[in-house]
Amino acid sequence: MNVFPYLVAAWIFLTGCYGLVTSRNLIHAVGCLAVCQASTYVLLLAVGYRDNGTAPVFSDLKPGTRPLVDPVVQALALTDVVVGATVTALLLALVLQIAKRHGTVDPDELTELRG
Amino acid sequence: MSRRLRLWLLGVGGAGLAALLVAACLDVPAFGRRSHPYGERAVRASLARHTANVVSSVNFDQRAYDTLGEMSILFAAVLGCVVLLRQAGDEHRADPRPAEVALPVRRYALLVLPVALVTGLYVIAHGQLSPGGGFQGGVVAATALHLLYLGADYRALERVRPTGVFEVTDSLAACSYLVLGLAGLLAGTAFLANTLLPYGTFNTLSSGGLVPLLNAAIGMEVASAVVVLLAGFLDQAVEIEREKGS
Image (cartoon, rainbow over all chains, first blue to last red):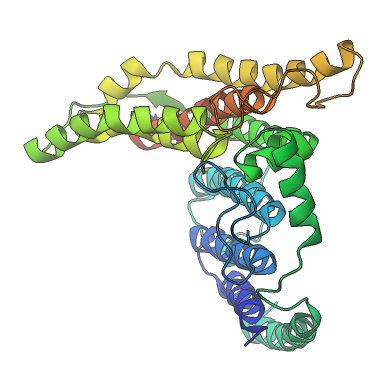
């Protein structure tokens, strides 16, 4: 199955989207966004995988002895994780303020604008 | 929009997106394939500059400019959280009450704290050699500090974690990344180009030229950013209360 990991990534992404749309709690929605983001980790690491590959780190590996997985997408996945964590933190801070000011975290109840 | 209409819209859009994604998946280069042209070039460049951890080489040498952007996102997010989680006008700070901690929890937390802190610093320091680096080690070191909250109580954590100091450290680390980049410009090469310092002996702490320095700056930034972030949320949970009757 050469496409299976990519399909898993697509499936995780769609699951996260479904959760986002049907969410009745903003904290749950932030969690769903994290699920969507997790699909990109799977996709990136799947793109970079090589059969029988090992980590691209030479502290205990002689260069050229074994095939390596792609280090570029691993660096991209690292960027992805960091940005995902900070965005989650920022969104949770927003949810906290919404809960304080409006007394609810249900997105359907947040229809009115208040100054 | 009613719930049914929304679900219906999601069904149509999701089915379309799923079809497109599957079509795209069938066209992506095969999983586990042998040829990775970018990866091979990255490994070659990393070996030429004596950096044992290729991922660190990509992050802090070949794509150091990209990491500058990533660091700015982190910095901006922390700034946003500090602003959002500040004490509002109708709130006051209550002194956190000393809490009872079960003895095994206290012992274990205080035992693990120094080990976790040293592990975090180790992961930062060896970023150019072994798996890990500034981002990962910074998170480990910052969360290690919070074992004090589990093992003792919030007041003990606040004594070892003056938020102001960590906010300044965060900014200083972000500045030092920029300054290290500008040093290249002053020396007549290019911004963040790793051609200034000697590359050193392969697989030693001082190898990799600019990589260990940028890695340390990121480690400092991430550690203080995580401390400031968690401080904002913990303050909200433990200390900040709304005034009565507002």
